[in-house]
Structure formats: C-alpha cells, structure tokens
Image 1 (tube, protein in one colour):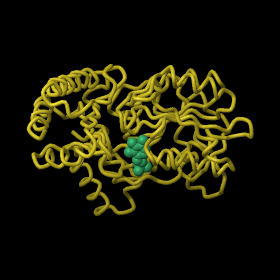
Image 2 (tube, rainbow, N blue to C red):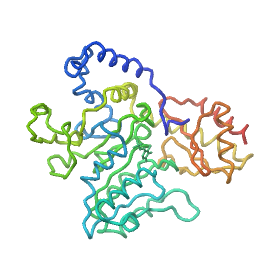
Image 3 (tube, protein in one colour):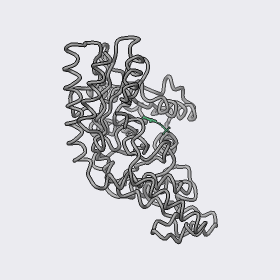
Length: 386
Ligand SMILES: *Cc1c(COP(=O)(O)O)cnc(C)c1O
C-alpha cells in the first residue's frame, strides 16, 4: 500500500538489467553503438520516451526528457522558467509542500537576490481544513497578480493526496502573465494527465513512485512544444546538443529543440533500463484504464474505512472525498500520539503503509498491482489494531 513512496519491482526489470550487464561484459564500450538487442547506449533513453509521453499527456516524445532526478530537474527548469525581475519575482506554491521542493524554490529566489520570506507565497488551507479549495488558490493568484513570476504546485499533494485542478491553475497563472509548472512526483502513473492540452509550461517527476522505476531512479521532465525555438537561458551539457555534431568536439552548441535540449549528461543505462522494465508494463494498459480501476479500489478503501469509523472513531480521512480531487492515496489522520503505534502494529501484520509524522498514515492502493483483497486485508488489519 506504499506505491506513493517506492513502487514494486516489475517482473521484466531484472531480465532487462541482466541483458545490459551481459552486453557490457561481452562488448565493453562498443555497446554504445553496436548493441545485440538494438538498444544502443548512445540513445538508450529513446526507449522510454514514448510511454513517458503517454503517461503525462505530452503531444509527442519531443516534449519529454528522461534525465537527472526530480529536484535537480526542477532546478534546471527554473533556470529557464523562473527569471524574476524587481517587479515580478514571486513564486506561488501550496503550503507544506514536499520539503525538497520548498528548498529548491527558496534557494532559487535567494540565488536571484530575493528573500524567500517575501518571494514565496504559500497557499494554506482554511482553518480547520486540510486541503485547498480551488477558489482560494485562484484568489491568491489574482491578488498577487503581476508580482508573480511563477505558479508551481504539485500535481497530487504528497501529504494529503489532493489532486489539484492543473488545467484551471494553469489558466489562472497564465491570465496574470506568470509561468506555470508542476511537480508530478505523486501524479505520474497515478492519475491521467494532459500536460500538452492543459497548456502547462513545464513539469518534472520522479520514476520510482507509481512508475516503479526502482529506488532513486532517473527523473523526467516536460517542456511544452510552444517553446520550441525559444532562446531561453539554460544550463547546457553535451547531451543537449545536436547528436549529429556531438562527437565533433568543436565547442559549438546546437541545442536540440524541445525537452531533449535540457539534457546535460549521457544517462545511466542501468537506470533507464530499469525504467524500461516498468514502462513495458504500462504499455499493456492506459492511464484511463488504470484510473477506472483506481477509482474503484480507492472508493472501496474509503468505504471500508468509513464503515470502520462507525465503531472505532479514532481517525479521520483528510484526503478529499470527491474522487476527482484525489488519486489512489488516502491519508488517514490519527488522534495525537497514536499514529506510530498503529503503523508499527500494521507493519507487524505485514501491512506496509507509509507514516508521515506527526499523525498521518498514507494508504495507497496502486492501481497497477494492488488488489481489492489487499484493500480488504489492510482495513481488516487496521480494525484489529485499533
Ligand atoms: C518524492 C518527492 C521528491 C523527491 O525528490 P528527489 O529529487 O527524487 O529525491 C521531491 N518532491 C516531491 C513532491 C516528492 O514527492
């Protein structure tokens, strides 16, 4: 029940990685260009672009790149998309965002000579509420208006499980002349996304949560094709330059149009191949099909929890009850001081959920592999524990 933290290992992954280890052992450096399985390392990431594009709703593979890791990709994107001026320098984000995101954005404002206390606007839930109302997000965006350089939310909030209205936030951000981006760590592989059609400027995600790419695996980024040909400032490396001249070594940078131009280094073949193992599984289905199953799984989890609540009212679900405003995760808030004991007792019964101090347990039936029986067993275990 913890696909939100680290997805399970796909069956295909071990075989694929062993194949690359064999090519490396047998052919050494020649694997870069001459690969017996037609996955030459020089373009190994080409093998994961199509499914990645499909999962995030990119129009074509040129809008996505598989590179670096999530927080570093956010930084590289902000080099292009956060270009503050003395009048327009603020970043609007949700309060209590994942700390790495806050650190990244705060350090970017500092880097540009602004004080994060002034430059970062955190949208908070109303008193007594846990999640954000879209009208409150919109109010803050409109109120800050032309002082805002960037609106940068998560897709699905890691703590509450709230799935934000990405399309609306994008429209509102654009209406005040700001750039709009998203951190999709908890959204990619969890909920259907239409980044291109929603006109999102940019996004980044990791591949080890719902995308099952393996611990600490490579990240992804999206840059909308409307920016093709735009001369953004960006940090460059040889992998972002035209492959035709990559080995000319003449120090002429010919930026690849689209997301691929953001790449700096040649990617880890083992990391990309590990992701390929998972994406071969996603290839057999679609985010729409997964979403249909996910609505049922999480709806069932909610139903069982609410039934249990009638006899054991020691917890509260803080994730929105509207299925449109959540992915697969339900965040369950316990009475003060109880959460860790509940978590440990569940773990002792072989039920692996996710604790977030001080008082929340996150239960995430990943639609790709969790079953209705898993959901039943989880709540049955919780009943016993309570
Ligand atoms: C998981 C997660 C991260 C982790 O960042 P890494 O750079 O991959 O270590 C960052 N932000 C959010 C919102 C996350 O959910």
